Image (cartoon, rainbow, N blue to C red):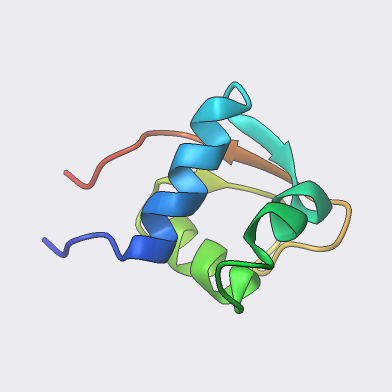
Length: 72
């Protein structure tokens, strides 16, 4: 089991604040002043089963959905 990074926790928190769903473009805007590499972080979160979106890497119009907020 691995711990979540600060960036992963930030994304999870923002998704929780928005009711568990957020458009990629909106999420990118929320993260742009904090860190870069949102797509890569989302890919890692998807691999951990924490978020879901269509495809391997989220597109600009992708809907990001929070499935759970912790690693089991």
